[in-house]
Length: 163
Image (cartoon, rainbow, N blue to C red; front, side, top):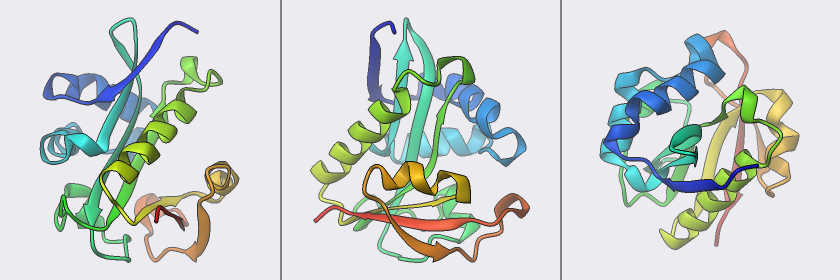
């Protein structure tokens, strides 16, 4: 695999990040407006994987002191608190043609490292049942079924204590 660069997203990445989000999540993904707002309000919580100047993967988040992350408004950064003790992953996505090359692992590893450097207490996320074992590889702990019904799916809460 060519050299993969993991870096913070910047406003010029909005279109590329949206392409990754939409390709991977289709109608369940964040809008271009949401992506832009996440980059603007919390660039330190938005990483991209880049190969030869092309964004091929993303991980993005918000921060909060809340434990319940099922609130849809939070995905619009309503209630986001840069100094919140919890960092919440909204999406981790890699373009299909680049999967299987360890890019999601690079994104997740850097995200965990950055979260620790930001002195966050926990990383929280919601995922579909099939992804529970993936996140458990990073020592995320299964919390249970979420109240969220985003996209009409059943979601599962996981968390990674950082302290």
